[in-house]
Each structure stands twice: as C-alpha cells, then as structure tokens.
Length: 356
Image (cartoon, rainbow, N blue to C red; front, side):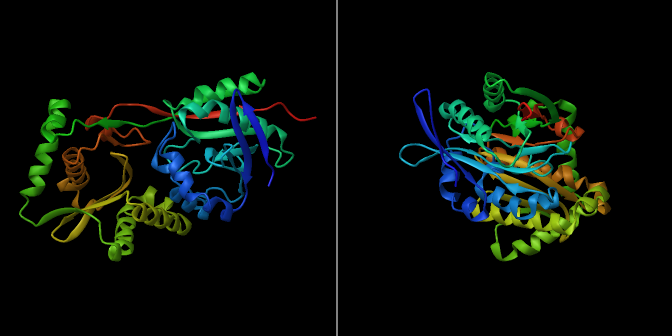
C-alpha cells in the first residue's frame, strides 16, 4: 500500500489507497462515524449502501471498474477523509476516477470529510493522485454533488491552484419539501387547489367501499417477499421494467436489505381489498425522508393510489417530526404540486495536463 504523508497548513494527513473489497469493508465502522460529522451527509454515502453498490457495480452500469478509494488519517490513526472512487472509462471514454455510486441509482454523492478538513483533504488528494503512476487517469469525473455541497467550490479552488482545469455543469432537478411538523400546517403551505385535490383523493379512496390500508414494512421475515412485491409494482411501468434487469434486481435487493439492517429503510405499501396497488421505497434517514423509487398497479388508477399513499407518507412524516421530504432527482410535475422546492445536482470535472 502506497502511503504519502502531507502536512497541509498545520494539518497532518497520511494518505493511502484502498484497492480491494476486503480493505473497503474493513472501514465500515469508522467510515460511518466520519460520515456523521462530514460536510456532506446523505444516505448514499453510507458504507453499507456503497458496499452493496460495488457488489454489482451499480446494477451492471460499470462492467469495467477497479476500486480506487483514497483515505486520509491523522497522526493518531483516526480517519479524516475518504474519496470513495473507482477507475473506469467514463461516458466519454476517458480514463476517469469516478465516485462510488455513480451515476444512475445514487441520487447524491460526495467525499467524506469534516468541514474543517475538507480543503486540506482535497488538497492532499490532488497531490496523492498526481504522484501515482497507475492507473493513468485523465479526469476526476464526479457526478451528483448537490449544488449546496462545499466540495464544489473547494475542489475548484484546489484544482486551479495546481493549474488543472475545473468545469461543472447542472444535471437534474431535485425538489424537496421542508416540513413544518404538522399535517394541517403543511397542507396550508401549498397551493389551495392542490390542497383540496390531495384531500379529495384521499377521501375518495377511503370512501370507495372497499377495505383500504397502508403500512410500512417492519417484519424482517417478510422483507424478501415485500421486495418482490415492490419490484412487481415497479415492473408495471414499461420503462421501469426495462430498467429492472436481473443484475439490477439483485442490486436493489441488496440496497433494501442494507438499509433495513442499518435501520433506515421505509418501504411502504397501499392495499385495496388486500391487493397492493402502490408502493414507495424510501430511506428514513437523519430526520429526512428520501424518496428513492415507486411502483403502481395501473388497474387501480381511478383511485389515484400513488397520490393517496404519498399523502399518507407526508402525513406520517409530519407527525413524526421529519424535517424534509426529499423527492431527489427528477422534475415530475406531481413533486411540485405537493410543494416541492427546486434544487439541483451537479457534475464536477477536473482534468490534469496530459503527461509527456
């Protein structure tokens, strides 16, 4: 293992490289501890999520991929930074270092470092990467950083100090709803017409004359069956069915189980007369609900099951004092009709001068 020790304005950091799954897995506990203090803290940076992602390379998205995660420790051996990366030809065919989780199934990505450590960590990371002889990477190609991430500004400054180019582009809308902690207060905050529509659809479903219930899965023994139920609902949409290859199904099962074991899964269903007609796969993490995917039975479209279940989930989130309901990537109209506030994810590209 190559070790490089750097002292960046009074901060001691020793950098090393993780190239094996065994090495990656050995970091689990201290990785998540660092994440809890990190400048960017989202569920897709949890060790268990990224470890599951790596098992299938994102559901088969990256058939050519070598683990290339750089970490930094202080003088006492404590973990101070993680750049969770892999080496691959990027979408443009360039030899690239990309963030684990890229691109399609992980909505928000970043590096791990405390706010006060972020600048020296990225500074040291550039020095470390410049000194390596292999792999012969040309670009850092980092997708899905939230526009509010301090990594963007810091990475730009660090790269330009070294004479490397830095570019960023806006990728996708990521609307979210700040929650007041009270259902009626939330409803009062959105458009009057939309407020009446939500109430009307929920009342119509409840008064349809058939048994109606919704629930959040909590039983470990039934989780495998419930995952299959959810995938079946997803598969009723032709685009999602094409997305659900065998390897992607394996990836989703692994991600759901990882979230369940760690205590932040919210898999919810709406049933009409015992038939599952809508499902939401969310993460209940850090007092936020992160809406990951959904599925519908289109035979029950007259009851608007997706809207009804979403209403119940928003009511639950308010009653349980969640601070935000994050729809993550995608600018579907319903997200804004429920009160979504817009923001974006970004792509940051750092390119170093060609080697002679």
